[in-house]
Image (cartoon, rainbow, N blue to C red; front, top):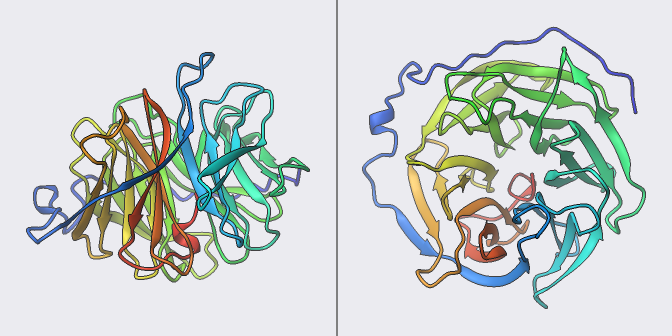
Length: 333
């Protein structure tokens, strides 16, 4: 593991009633596409030891194979899986004794699969065949161990991670952070005082990050400086009508549209970068008992989307037609 580099923290508190934003009119009065996703396959059954299953982090490799993590997989059962979408088959890739992986991304630099270990506060990686496990970063950052949830890579292989601390508390408590871990393993706090950030994805030109704030049900935009080591501006982008559900993982397509998953609602909402609610992707009425649609992957160069959906009946994959082609920003995390 590389030496930890500590730099000064940029505190970016975001006020729910940010300048120029009106939550009451955030989801604008326009025609919204409603799409019913198609069931592809069941991937996992609920685990007896952990009491459930939760699929996350879908990411396609260059050969079109889909990798997933099961957050609730206990020791000895597959924590990373590989899916052949055409054959509708799944096979185990990796497990260990203690990790709870919440996201997966393939590095643009070394081609390895990077995983956030929520319980271990670490970022780990494996080869795509499941061998050669390594730890990129673990330990405290500015006095606190992170609860790493989702990740996004910049083109140089640096990781941007949501530290979703405080997710079990009320939304006015804001211990959450955005962490940047360099490709060499040096970590800094990019932003702090946040209401449990969860989803994270770069916009279409890597100039800023869309951050889904789990305990605020909104999607914020963080404009970065030229080095991507500092926040130039941050403000609310979309206020989300989640009801009792909360925003989960986030993806962005080639036209900059933001795909927002939910914890507690089996839907994906798609927003334009201007904040318009463009589409709602839902399950059919006769779907199994599934209550959470955490994340999507759009295979790069296509509009073929896959959504991870989980609940009492297990972990499933559903397919949908994306509004624009997939890129790295819509593939994993």
